[in-house]
Image (cartoon, rainbow, N blue to C red; front, side, top):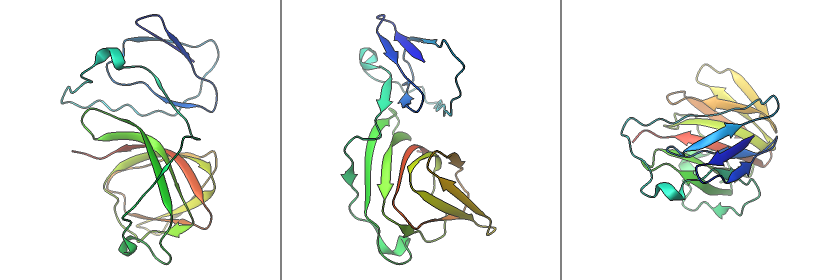
Length: 172
């Protein structure tokens, strides 16, 4: 996929890469081959846009970017040992409701509950299991992409480290 901005700058994206096209970017989408994509469109009705339209550009989500340790984890949110988690927010929309980034964690089991956001996840490394409020189990492995909608009660379990790219919507 080639994205060409209003100044004629071309950004090239290839199979296996993830990227963000910020709302308000004036661009041309060009593809020369068949493309299969998983995508999220966040179209906030507030009309909020970037204050600097010239700074808008397609953004590659680099899964190897340095992640920051997540401090302040609450042991009440987990069963068993407190995991080590790291995150890097690569993009946040102007309303602060939509985030894209990379997250990783050691093995863990979350307490069942509603997380309060919708999240599209693409597993880069490891595997995990979601058990929904009806007790149905779903297993996800490296290469899988899935959506957990807001309001879905569930529990996340992993017996190995997991790394993912996420697109998360938390209503403001």
